[in-house]
Amino acid sequence: MLAVASVLVLAAGAAAFFALRYWADNMSGNFRHKYTLYVYPDMTAGEVLDSINAGALAVRRGSLERCARKENLQERIKPGKYVIDKDASSIYVVRMLCLGWQTPQNLTLSGTLRKKERIAQVISRQMMVDSLEVDSLLRSESFLAQYGFTPDNVFALFLPDTYQMYWTSSPEDIFARFKKEYDAFWTQERLEKAERQGLTPMETSIMASIVNGETLKSFEYPKIAGVYLNRLHKGMKLQADPTVAFCFDYTLDRILKVHLKVDSPYNTYRYAGLPPAPINVPNKSCIDAVLDPDSHGYLYFCASPDFDGTHRFASTYSEHLKNAREFQRELTRRQKAKAAARPAA
Image (tube, rainbow, N blue to C red; front, side, top):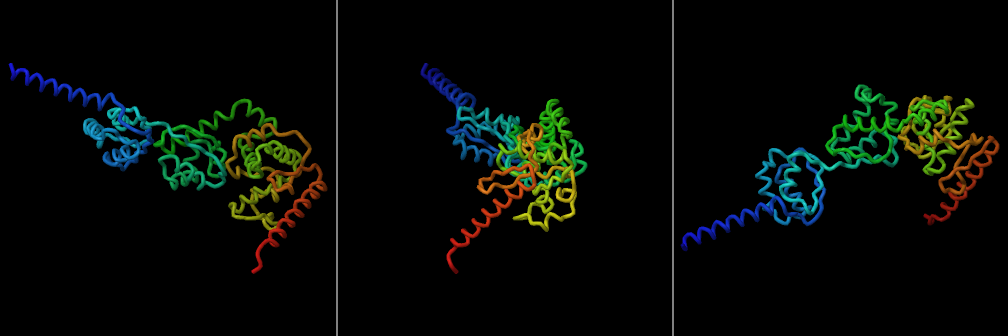
């Protein structure tokens, strides 16, 4: 009887042990912190487990390693972005990595986007793509043709916003998403508004890129758009400084009269009408400002002498010259005050 009892005790103990192990591996939350894990293609299972342990702080590392062996993590692991919750079990996390249950990544386009290399950097910092590859694709006629764009007008494809997609998305998938958002943005209502302004969607983006280059004050977008549309409809040259800056690849600190003579189809001081393509990536508000501009008679504007980033607008050239002289006087005064404040050498 004693032997039987001993066997029963050992069996019960073994059953409890395996039940406890099953619970620890499959049912119990095993992490102290929520953690976002990025798995790169060349990472080993050991490196991934080390990262999880360091970031999420596994309560029972042995449970995590046991599940990794059981699921053959080393051979099955898939690259991606994975969010590990505190209450996740070891087996769930390992299977998540083996089956590629990724968490979507936010890809945000924002800020000043006026060079292809900058766009490539913004995308590559947030996605598992190489910036040099993206930059190369932004200059590829054949690649961009798939989406209806060219290296010259590709700025129009991008609409600054936040988009959710998988971190491991290919460049083709990323550009396809941008094209999908572009098509969704250009609703029938917007197409009709562009037509009323005598513009195509591409021409609207071109005009919006000029507005975008003129001011950081979003409340001025409709008024500035109105100025340029007034000039365009009257057959006047746009004479937009941002287009000259584009001609010099945005390397100028100040635009001088000599720069206005550069022979380029983008120089709106020399050539009437719109330039051939956008000069930067305009935001949605700029595009909508071109579609719904302020109605006024202004044909000119210049920086305000208040130096607050706003502009003064004028309907006549004489009024514009007066505003420009006021700005220049204030600029000169500030420069002299700054020079006087410098300590003597």
